[in-house]
Structure formats: C-alpha cells, structure tokens
Image (cartoon, rainbow, N blue to C red):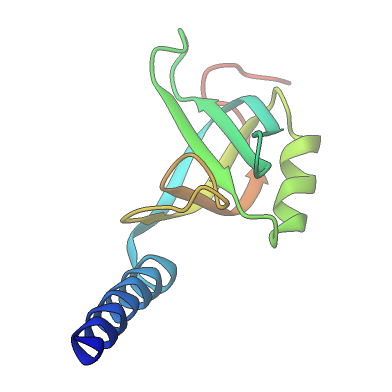
Length: 122
C-alpha cells in the first residue's frame, strides 16, 4: 500500500512538473499588434501583475488585452511613458498562464512608439 501511494504521488508530481515546464517554455504564437494604449496598470490581490489594453480601432470596438512579466522592467517603463499614445507591441502568446504571471495569455516582450494611421500629426 505504501509503495502504491509513493508511486501515485510521484506520478502526480511528474505530471505537474511537465505541465509547468510546458506552460513556461512553449509559446503558441509570436507577433505584433498596434493600437492606442488606453490602459496600463499593476493589479491584483494576492499577486500583483502588470495588465494593459490597446484599442485597435477608431471607436475602440476591438480591444487587445495583454500582460507584462515583472522581469521586463524596460517594457514596463516604456508602456508607462507611452500611455495614451499609438504603440506597436511585440508579444508571445502562451497556451496557458499562472496567476502570478498575469490575467491573459499574451505577454509583451517589446513596445515601440508609432505614428497613428488614423490621425496625421504634423
């Protein structure tokens, strides 16, 4: 009975570690999105995460929600500076997330300021 319990616990532990490694290392897609940065804040109760949104249309009908990992301090600083401006975001999409990473599966790895195609700012 003791041997079966040890094997069961070992099996559950191996499955958990395999799931964690899969979520941590494997990305589903990579790409860029552009839009007006309408929200960027640190939120949460147990674990504070950086969350944001860009509007990809004139009316704000299409919203792209994203997260930024704490280790990307340079990206966090850029996004705080670019609030309300048109930005291009480079992201990695993951299959899943952990509550201490963020609310979404889209994680921003770079942010650049862009010229808005909707408004000609001379």
